Image (cartoon, rainbow, N blue to C red):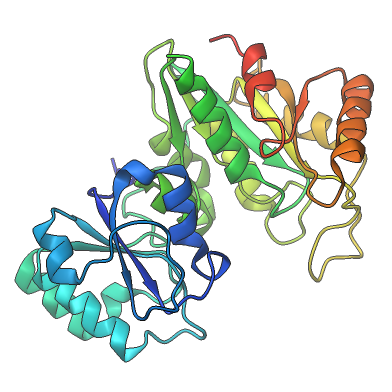
Length: 338
């Protein structure tokens, strides 16, 4: 059976010439959530954003024990800049792996493939699923699982899952964040880019990602897409079936009324309808699946308005509601059977 990607630690964060954390959002996400996995950063000039780690060259980082050269930003266009290519070759020659969430496949670049062959280093294109993924079985498996689901894309499913996992572990309970997208994989150091999997193997891939575990262990699985998204509903369905989640957390951006981007003709249904459909699908493989609560993005509201909106949702839906940035995830984890 195939296994999910696993990154070697610690990391050298490559920041290129990004002038802000937003433009180096993958590296910034890794630095925020997993600072213990980061040993150094490589910036191409003094104007590049500083994430607070020691500045090192490839050679210095290798000597300091860095095991993975992590590309923490994306260039404009689909071509790897020549200056980046030289650094990637140097990293491989120094004994490091390369981890990339870029759309361009680094393993298909002849110079990098040859450097990897000679050094024995790995090129980890995390958007490339591993071979041999099975079809889903739907067989019940041990352990506890939580899945974040959404009313739309980009509503906080990854951030919410990371916050919930951190809160569970803070309480001394066994938990693992299971990443399903490229940024989450690079934050966690392992995972599987579920949106790159052939559709027949989606649920099986989730079964591989979150396998049977100890009865008291939680897998907190990062959701993708939405059952209501005209383009990305398939991956959401596969996640729901493969996760066999005991608990669902619905993620939503307050005030968003339609699918974002070029899908404004597709309204987001009432939250009660979204919850009911997600539970119906989840209960196909776990008849006891239940809604734990909501995690909202309230960044477009002031503090008082956000607090009032969350309180209103709690009264209407009868479940706890958090904003992981403003409130943390404690209220949701309080409700878990940990």
